[in-house]
Amino acid sequence: MTDSVNRISSGAPWEEKFGYSRAVELPNGLVLVAGCTSVVGGQISAGSPHEQAITSFEVAFAALAQVGLGREDVVRTRMYLTHARDVDEVGRAHKELFDDVRPAASMIIVSGFVDPSLVVEVEIEAYRAGAR
Image (cartoon, rainbow, N blue to C red; front, side, top):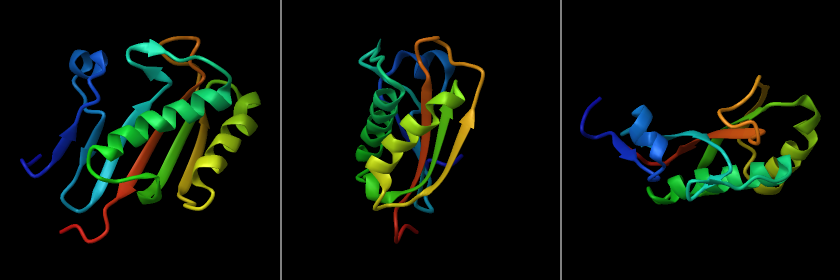
């Protein structure tokens, strides 16, 4: 990758430990945000699947804010869930946050996350209009 790629850190300990960035901004205007869970300040902010989804998206929005983008710039979301029974709660959270934005979205059931109290992880992609 070239120096024109902007790598954004959230300060989470896993970024350094595992060698990744919270988000990557590409010169073409695309911003990719890594999987976000309801871990805030190094602590799991567990709760209902709805609450975890909201918190996870807020973590992703904080990464976007570092490059001057917001919820309205999101063009794609991915929601990973550990249980199909949580689809409606996570979907409700998504609608609350994105009903007026309407990004392309996927919801995928997975076997689990690094901590069993986490039931939702989200990824987002955003686009900066007018990028070179």
